[in-house]
Length: 288
Image 1 (tube, rainbow, N blue to C red):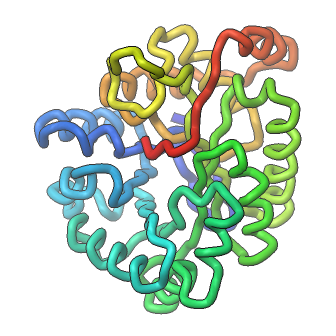
Image 2: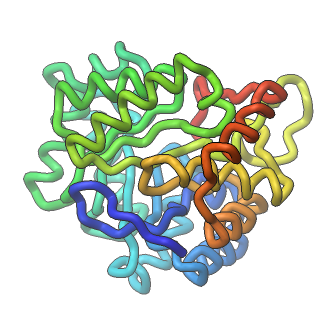
């Protein structure tokens, strides 16, 4: 699998990051199969969070074997210094590790959430302390909403984050305002050498009142051809890595698509964007 430099961290991340939300909702045996799958296919970047159910616990038995082989990112959804410190200590214990590679503010998509995190006594203080204590080397910010690119652009003005994580897919890119916002953030990341991590690559539609057939908060694309196109579209942009979907049945298809990825030329991208009107990609409140 292709690897790309994660900005100033210098880490060569696989173009798919193992998003562990899916293994937080299954038993250990099923989780083990998913973990082995991504390792077998060259995935070397893992992303976990306290809000991903039992994901940290599912990863713990693997840490002695793989900790030195993976770039491990974790997050806190807390907004205060005290709450974030409690999150961090609990995550380290549940993961069975003494250090992370990347620690991130989780789901900061709105400006008021950024204000809370960066205020005196806010969660950002815990991230800075963790870096000073050697618990993590790099600091990042993530967001799920349509406002995330604008909010993260402001975040980079307030603090020198090493990575950003935000939604991007061909449906969102067809929205001119979102494209402008995301483009401005991508350019800022290029100038500041910030690693770019994408989520929601294969998001299709909100569930609405329909029964959920997958463990993702949104309805994902499931046919291989569309997943291939969605993954290729995102990886054709100036990004480092995309997170696999939070469902263990979709995971192999995303990994497969990334392994076969070839950049889409402008005509192919335009053709895919022309189909975007059939879908309504949801993000507000999404953790998976």
